Amino acid sequence: MMKTFIRAFTIMSWLLCTSLGLAKEEIPAGDFLSNPWLQKPLTAIMTAVNSGDTDAVLAMATIYDTGTKFGATAEIQDIKPDLTKAVQWYEKGAKLNDWRAQYNLAVLYYDGRGVAKNHSKAKELFHLAAESGDEMAQAGLGMLYLNIEIGGKPYPWYKDGAKWHLLAAQGGNWYSQYTIATLYEAGLGVVKDPVEALKWFLISASNGHEPALVQANRMERTLSPNQAETARAFAKAFAPRSSATKGRVPAMGMEVTAQTQPRGFGSGFIITASGYVLSSCHVTEGAKAIKVRTAKQTFDARLIESDPDNDLVLLKIEGNFTPATFAKEPTAQLGQTVFAVGFPLPDLQGFSPKVTKGVISSLRGIQDDVRMYQIDAAVQPGNSGGPLADENGNIAGVIVARLNDAFVVQNTGSIAQNVNYAVKKSYSMAFIENNQEASKQTQVAGETKRLPFEEAVEKVRKSTVLVVVY
Image: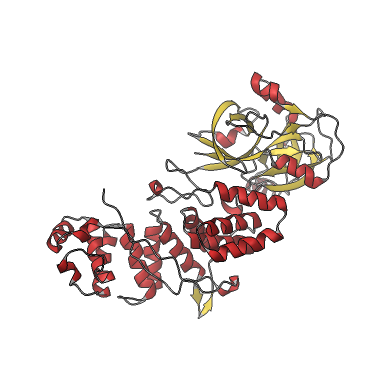
């Protein structure tokens, strides 16, 4: 199979909106990889063009675009650069749905070289190439959305810009890694998340981008040691999207494997040092594959046992871990302070764990379900399966549901405020007892003195994991 190539280029207009406070930068040049057709006679190239060979079409576009300095034969080297003809050849390639032609043509339309400047046309072509999975096109599309002007004034579409820059960053584009870090730090287009910001600054810096290193050093001085440690762990575990994913756009905010895309996220927590994980059954329902992501790395998970009636599932990952401890008390008290740790809406809010605090609002769930607590700690999609902990950081329950806002409005005319549910510890422990190995290793807290809230959160955070479903 012929190697693909990308035309080397520079766009001096590649910059972020001035509201971000970033200096104007040159975008990274694309890599020009060898195209076998450039080593062959022109007649052979044209024969291949007539048979619909996209590599041959791209070779002709390159010949007119670059001044033929990459061509090997004398007749190719005699051809003079002609951007107008390059555009014509890129148009041919774009009509053949070749993402390389779509991308290079988009750049020319954006710059107005060889063709009249047309940012709308550039955006259309960037979209086509970006949807194929090309990170350079995704970066270009992100740049366009962040540089929209209306009436001569900046009017950036931060959400769309962040979406495409994040995809490009996951594909390994160092400029987009730097850009998405800046957006996470400022909370523009994404939920403000300093841990995600530092993670992406570190990743961009590891690719040799010196300004990213400067920003990473600055941020590390402003974050807590735990936040900085989490960001460094995520950065270290990062692996760019495989080239095998070319042709598929991954879900926003999640690095994907070459085999598939995640179709859902949830939370969970490690209950044994050997790697048993408790989560919510509806999170993994219909899963073809499950991965569990800790602060340090991602593991393949096996589904051991499920309990749809109580919405619980037991997973297993391999390794040595710090497990959660369950509360000694058989039940929580009405009005007792509790908190939830998990990964709500990770494709929007990022992959650092989030903490919400509240109380036990009722000792029974919806319609007086005795298996559930009602809590007012805020939860969102993605929190399901995560731990509900007491003030000492011991497990009191498993987050499983929130009251459906649309249903309540339709039936009552009002919006329910922070009405959420967790399976009680006693039902969770009964479920774990079905597995003898997990049950023997599960830890129950002894007599402990009251922990400062921050220490209790840190205790739970160490065992809380992101569950990724494929």
